[in-house]
Length: 94
Image (tube, rainbow, N blue to C red; front, side, top):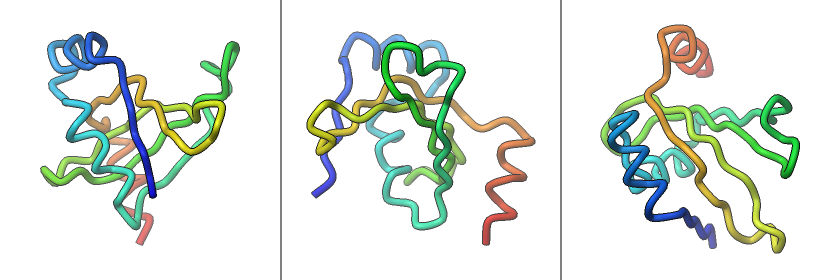
């Protein structure tokens, strides 16, 4: 079973900054068409990944996340609405 976690304070900041709740962001992990990428530019202290997918609100989001040490838990770091180029990449993945 997929377990997701996040820092509640960071989640509040994310809503104010990007207009995306981590509750909505977690739904992207259940999108069968989602695309996942390794994020080498932000992986100095830990391996970070980006997932591009559609949320339950039908918005295409980019969610930055990492795997916890046990690799059974995904920690959401940030989430934002996809930009036009990212939405095009997502829509071509059919």
